[in-house]
Length: 166
Image (cartoon, rainbow, N blue to C red; front, side, top):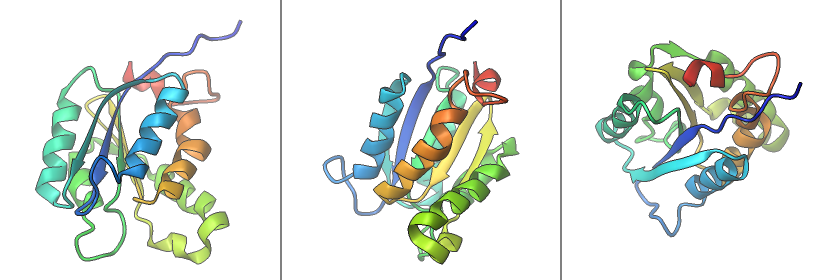
């Protein structure tokens, strides 16, 4: 018997000092991909690359029992203000170490050894899964198409995150 798809409520956060709603292609890509997969899009925000602004927004979504997943784009590199991992990791109950590892592995095909500069991270906090990925639109497509689309689908076997969230 085929399992019925369980849609998740997904929020998207873009971390950037320069992007706005008109220029935020990465956040829009994540939003569009989630909707195309059948999920419910809840909210999208853009915050400056500031640890406390990032934490404040992510904390708000973690505390909301209606939000199942938070997808964050930007702030994962090594530039001076890149601080998404430092903002998010202290909020996590558990890290999903495999997300960053797999993201760097699948990114190697596209960007070669530059993938070592990605600090993509994932984790769980208060029954909310959080995935932080680079700010490029291509990186967001890679993360969604090669990892997240399956891990946020309750029909994917042998395991996925949905059963932990709903």
